[in-house]
Image (tube, helix red, strand yellow):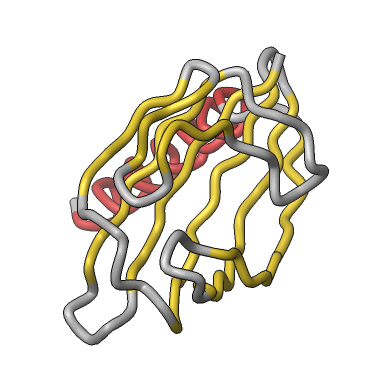
Length: 128
C-alpha cells in the first residue's frame, strides 16, 4: 500500500510539472544592477538589485533591491505608476528598467524599512 501511495505521489508530481512549466512559458533573462541615485537632501542612496526581464505575452521586469547609504527620505508603502507615481520623497516620477533603460508603461513598487538603516524595494514593471 505504501508503494502505491508513493507511486501515486510521483506520478502526480510529474503530471503537475509540465503544467507548471507551460504556465510560465516565456523567456526570462536574469539581471543584476547597482547604482547610486541622488535624493532630494543632496545625498545619494545606493541600490543593489537583482531581477528578471520576462518576455511572453507581456514584457515585464520583476526585481528586488537593497537600498543603503542615505535612506532618510524613504516612506514605507506601495505605489502604483501609470506611467508615473507620486512617491514621497521623490515626487512624481516615471520608472525606467534596470535591465535596458526603457520607460515602464505601468509599475508597482513597494518600499520596506528593514529596521537597520537599510530598505528593500520590490518592483514589478510592465512595458508596452
